[in-house]
Length: 308
Image 1: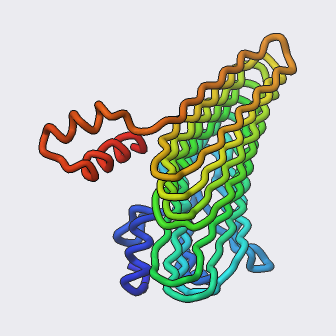
Image 2: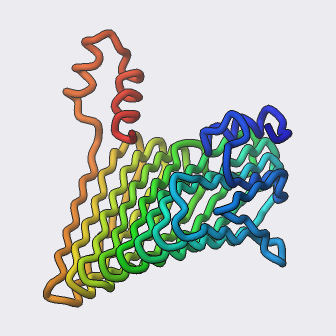
C-alpha cells in the first residue's frame, strides 16, 4: 500500500473503496501532490506539463480494466483546481473511479475543484464513479466543485454514479454531455446534506444524434437547515429519447428546489420529466418501529434504502 497516515487511509476507503493499492492503472493525489502512479500497457496516465492534472489515454479495444484516481485532502487551507482529461479509445470498456475526500480539522477552508473531460470514441463504454466525502471537526469548510464534461461518439455509452453522502459543506456540480448517433448516457446521482450545507447540481444534456438517449436520475435528502438545488436540462435535437427524474426527501428545516427543463428541437424527440419532493411517510416509520426500531433508527433505515 502507498504510504499514508490513518486519516488519509480512512478517507481513501470512503471515496474509492480501496483498502490496498489497486491492480491496474492508478494515480493517488494527497494534499496537492501525486504520491503514487501506475500505467499499464493499455492505459497510460500522463501528468500535464503545468502540473495541473492528468491525461489518461485508454487504448482502443481495452476491456475489463480500471483506472483509480482518488484525491485526499487532510491539510486545512489547501485550495486546488485539477484538470483531468480521459481519452477512451474505440471498442473499449473500462471503469474509472475518481473520488475526493476532505478531512478538515483546522480553521481555514479546504477546497478541491476537479474538472474532468471525457472523450469517448465509437462503440466504447465507460462507467465513472465519483464519490465525495467530508470529515473533520475544525471550523474550516470542506468545499467540492466538480465539473464533468462528456463527449460521446457514435454508439458509445457512459454510466455515471455521482455520490455525496456526508460532510461536504458546499458543492456546485456541473455536468454537460453531448451525444452523437446511437450514443447512450445514464446518470445516477445521490446526495445528502445536513446542518447548513448546500448542494447545487446542474445537468445540461444535448441529444444531437438519431437514436441517442439519456436517463438522468437524482435522489436527495435534505436534513437540518440544508439546501439543495437541482437543475436538469435535456435538449432533444434529433430522433431521440430523454428522461430526467428528481426524487427528494425533505426533513427538519431543509429546503429543496427542483428545476426541470426539457427542450425539444425535433418532432421526433421524446422527452419526459418526473419529480417528487416530500417527507418520510408516517406509516413507514410506524411499520419499522413496530419491529423494535427507535424513530431515529427507522429514519436512518428509510434514508439508507432511498439513497442506495
